[in-house]
Length: 330
Image (cartoon, helix red, strand yellow):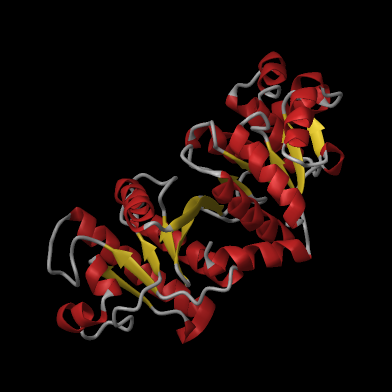
């Protein structure tokens, strides 16, 4: 376990928040729930068959009385939730009948628990695709007022170092403006979790060594991000691009390829030019280098909802629950 993970648990335990785990029948979720109860880093709501979850928790040495278990199909609030969902989506063509059916889905039901104030955040994705986990949040929770771009970041932990990789889950091919938004939101995430951001916008080119639409887009995004970051954070946050990864991360390479870069090969926040490169890179680093990967942590939502990789284990779930609780506490 990384130092970052230990700090997450300690901080989340100071102000435990109520987090919904909709996939309550998954063994990894149950293993994580039992450990979370022991750690005290969050209060939990599990969704699924009540008796089965109670028995599974008891087998793991956890007291089911210490958390809330809800069967969405039999919950007394279904009518209220269906009406609320219909009001949110009626302009999109949703009918009351369709709303009544959709809200029995555990992800939609859990997201409505958060929206209507019955919980502080949600973590799912152990056995649902990212699209099926994130779509209800975009439809129900929606963005902060004025937020233009919903994005995501991964906390990549290796030994005592933690890096942020963005965006690896949401925006397929971000425009220059969206790259700027992703950069600013990732900087905010870094500060929230005690990371002093040093930001590189990545490309296959370093300072014009390559050419193409992708290079131009990252260069424009960098210019906008530099301007906004300086206006918001002053000189405390170095931002540079377009940079190849080695020029952003290796001081000796930076001296050769971009000697005038203020990062000088010390970046710890990496903004990827598109979803493909970001997603591939985080999985490669996780599997080849043995990094802990927590996320995708969503940025820009009005309330925290976070996704899990379907390849996650109970450790990943615990860390993501702690991250979600910390976000909710803010």
